Amino acid sequence: MDFRDSILQFAGRVEKLCPQIQTEEATKNALIMPFIQLLGYDVFNPFEVNPEFIADIGIKKGEKVDYAIMREGKPILLIECKHYSENLDPHNSQLFRYFHTTEAKFGLLTNGITFRFYTDLVTPNKMDEKPFFEFSIGEIRDNEIAELKKFHKSYFDIETISNAASELKFLNEVRALLSNELSNPSEEFVRYFAKKAYPSVVTQKVLEQFTTITKKAFNLIVSDLINDRLKSALKTETAKAEPLTGEQEEQDVKVENGIETTEEEAEAYLIIKSILRQKIDPQRIHLRDAQSYCAILFDDNNRKPICRLYFNGKKKFVEIPDENKKFSKHEIQVLDDIFGLGDKLMEVVEGYET
Image (cartoon, rainbow, N blue to C red; front, top):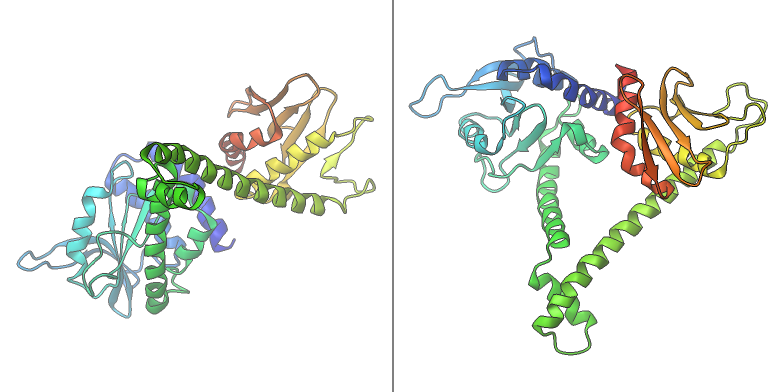
C-alpha cells in the first residue's frame, strides 16, 4: 500500500474512532501515534520519536512537548497534541513558546483531525503566527497528501520543506483572500471589474449592480471548470470501458435475461465510479442490471449493494442502503445530482471495507 492509500485508509478510520475517544491521552494513542507511524517513524523508539520531550523555557524548567521527531539526537519536528474535539486556535502560543528553545525547524499542532504545520518564515528561530500548511484529515486532498509526504522519514529534507513552505504560506493566503472576495466581494474588487466593463462613470448604484454581477460571473466560471473536469473524467472512464466484450465472463456492465443497460444508467455508473475512486479501486465497483432497477455493487457482490438506480419511470431515483441494508430513496432531476450524494455513497463503501 502506497503512502496516499495509507493516509486515505487512516482518514476513513478517524471518524469511526472519535466517539470512543474520551481524553487527550486517548487521542494521542488512537490518532496521533498512528499518524506519526504513517510518516515512517517508530513511535516506540525514543531515538526517533521522543515523547514528553523537555523544552526548558527561561526560568521555567521541565516544560514538555508531547512528541519530538528526532534525527541524529536533535529534534526536527515538535508535535503538540490536543483532544480531538478541542479548537486549536487558543493553543498555538504553547507551541510558539517551545519552538524557539529547541533546534527544531518545524512545529505541528494537532487534535488528530486538524493538522497545522508551522515554521519560521517571518523571523528566524521564531515560530510564525500562522501555519504554512494545514489540512483536515477527513477532507484531505491529493495535493495535500503530496505536501505531507515531504515530512515522511524517507523524504524529509529541511531545505526542500522550507522552500515549499514559503510558497505554500502565500498560496494559502491568496487563496483565502480570493475565496472571501468570491463569497463577499469588496468594493475595491468590484470596482476593478466595473471600470473594465462599464462604459461610463462608476456610481454607487453601478457598484451595487456589479457586486451581484461579479459574484454570478465567478460562480459561473467555477461551475464551468467543475463541469469540464467531470466531462473529462467521464470520457476517460468511457474510454477505459470500451475494450470490454460480450465474451468476457466477468463483465463490468452486465446484460442479463435480455435486459439492456440504458445510456443514462451507464453514465450514472461512471459518475459513481468517479466519485468513489478517491476511496477505493474503481475496478471493485460493478453494475448489474435488473428488470426494475440497475444495481451498483461492491466487488460484484449482491450482498454489498452501493446503490440502486431507478431510471425507468417518469421520475429518477437513487436508493442508497444504510448499515442495516435499509434503503433510502433520493430523487434526482439530472444525472449530475448524483454528485450531491457522494458522501452517502462514500459511507456505504467505507462500511464494506471495515
